[in-house]
Image (cartoon, rainbow, N blue to C red):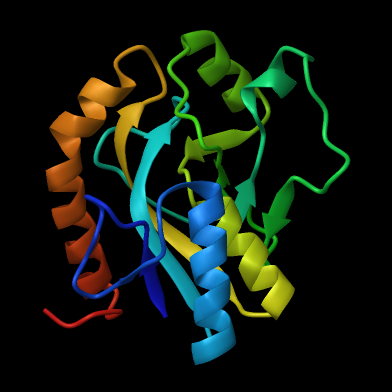
Length: 178
């Protein structure tokens, strides 16, 4: 099953599950209970913490949920905040998810120093639901912005072309038909 967020980030080849951590988890759980998919592939945009450039396509099987308060040591969590379906020995790109978009260069650099490469609002929910249901999963992302003060402006400017690039990538990989 190919998934996307929804709202302005939809594809005719993907099922929208909602924007953010909560709606995506609720709606994906519903889909898993009813349709029992064999594989989950999330397709969407992402912000870069600096190691990936605008319009770069990145694949991942690892997600984290690191909130910005954690970076300043103002918060902690008792739950496992990294989920991975990565089975190979190669280093996987970690995609962080939060209901908030990072707009601080300092926070961007801190995330990068933790080994986190990208930011997407829904991916952690997708990976966690997949883990609970025992479904193999992954994600394909196109970078639309850096996680800095210009994040929203750059996202708006690059989002349309990112969707075109994601479609082309999926066609090239044979995951969808042209």
